[in-house]
Length: 327
Image 1 (cartoon, rainbow, N blue to C red):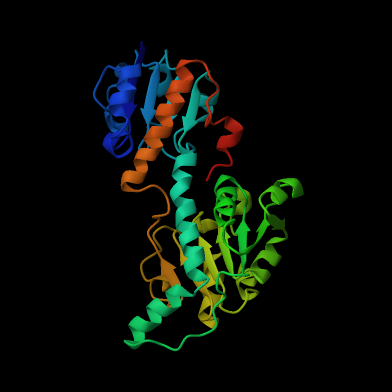
Image 2: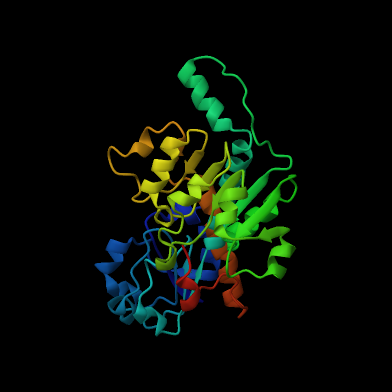
């Protein structure tokens, strides 16, 4: 039987519904460890064949890896692994798989909810009614039927969102220089430039990974070109947007709305105009998995364990190349 350890901040949050079943396949030979605990007792790693981790996972540096000579696989019940892995890790013949797909499910759900609400200008009415303490006149809204939704980047989350939008009577356009016309056609999406996405869309939803190449991708010019009463939604990363330029435009164009689940820095600095601007909706990075949604990530890792035990290809294995483009 494989020997295993749990190393993460909160084992119950992610593995609360799967811990017992995992224990039927793997001998968990020590209590769950935190990053700090295992660093103070590296000898505990000597027997480990597999590690189950998640938020607060250990840094996989040379010292850690040398203390775990039998380590064969790491099951990471969360999203990006970039904060765990090192160059030293990729030199080893150790598999690592991530629940990034599971963590993407609630992001898609969040984005879908805000797209549909924004096409009715829902936040405009909510906030103005509170301000006026009375109903306000109904203004023109895009509405769902026949409106245009722009998706920036058709990675896993962007593609899944397009699929979720299929039942609604919206036109989908997208910017992604790495997606072929054939792939886009299967999603019923028209590919266009980033400038066109902002110019033509009633709602723009951002799903670009944070890479050096994507920092500051969205500028004030993009916001200035948006249609009247349009909305921008960001559930990706704040650094992709030049926020000062965005704020300048939003202050001049109160008809536009920005729904920001991510900012840069996060949270915004004390005194940032984002906290008070009437046409900015801030949520504290709630798009990803929360509460019971986190159990889905543990369930994905349980399924990966079952594949690993019978020698099947891991569905969500992360390679060195793949890790570089994960948000």
